[in-house]
Length: 135
Ligand code: FEO
Image 1 (cartoon, rainbow, N blue to C red):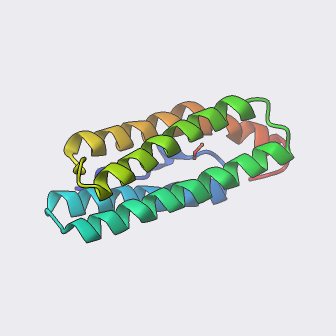
Image 2 (image 1 turned 60 degrees about the vertical axis):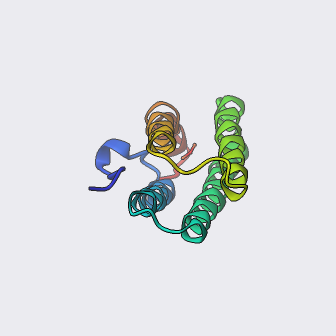
């Protein structure tokens, strides 16, 4: 069973970001599978890197649209993004140095962070962007 399953409940009303969230879910699920199957360090490291890279790309896309449209919660939203990026980078470094395996606790942290962030913060921008004609 995947760790994260996208459903309309995660819908933000902005198609490009829903599509990006689906891709993020895929990457988290790939990492989860690799961890569960005890895949090699190299594979897990690659998936962790892909997840980190894609997260960065996705956050940058949201932030660019927010900035262009003067989204009133831009600063606080960006702070949440930055916090996760710092944590993912830290995890990647520790993993590469063999000091922190990807554990069920790490996966739960990622799942909960993504779930909370989409529900509490991302879904807030939908009506704002819709009001600007962005869907
Ligand atoms: Fe979809 Fe704000 O991250």
